[in-house]
Image (cartoon, rainbow, N blue to C red; front, side, top):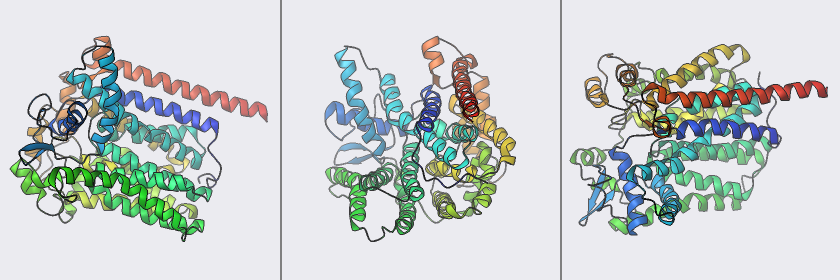
Length: 492
């Protein structure tokens, strides 16, 4: 059984513990720098063009220092074809970084540009998921140990880790989605919601949509949960809440409409409509931005198939169906049960219809990352007898995902070409994690990391400082808990 229903404000001790968990995850995310690729470069080129040149055209960068084939061409100019949410945060981060380097008369190299913007715009916001996980788990289970394990298991034991080190939009969308849900979850438990929080939650959802367009469906599902919470709060007829919510969600969306209108002359014309790459243009012109009807075989490939299935990469997720069965026994959390289940199933089905569901040159189906934080909900409700399975699967998940984050993608493109034929996996060939990733690690083909940069370490030893730091932080966390328990006993 879990603890009593959450109905008290967050304590100072709980917030302090959550901050320590945040630091653990932020250090891990900040330790690596994802290698350049055309997807990342497309987003960063928009940041560069806007801040350095005061324009939206990426003409100066798309074929030089930020080479990309992920671009649009319209009226004689090149533009990023990506949703602009991550680039908007990048612009906000780039202004102070650029000012400091200019003020200190130091050259901001392309690599430093990419690393600073990735850390400030992606890693830092994504790491905020960890304290959210911890607070939710601790409030429900009353267990600091369970909170720590599950927070690290989802933050570092799923592809949130790898993509929290790269300038994509997936982990940002995941953060905005889960933070918006958390605000309404707390409102449900405490039986109150403020007007500013209603506006902020809507703003987060709007920003999520302009960061990853397919997440619009998730915003609708969360909207249904919000209506339920308002009903439980007796606020269903509070039109001020609806007005602020509408205003909050429209602020980011209006920015995108203005961006589209400035470039293409219509707020409803997106970059995907003018792709330079003929294959991308053809694919995105079918269905909705490349998404057609769901494919149940692809659902299997994304989840349970050993080659690319997310459950094999992060085996902690195998325990989630068991957690949902225990969650169903808790009357106070039935709404959250249905919300998490429906959101996860809907999004996996949606992405199964995407023409490139595996995400291109990727070790995992990266497009389903926005729903990964929701797996914390069923895992929280696993009873104490599952502590050992939780610990074992969490450790395996973290080791596998740190490996995926630490290695390069050398040889991955060819492997995926042999693995996937016409969007399907005809036979079981193997796991890219073992066939490609581990081979790269053994060959010292590692992603750039701080052990290499700051300590001139090479190969596997370059990962040692990260493990040492994390172990020290975990020991500090355990010491704090031991001291608190001793103090509680003396108080009695």
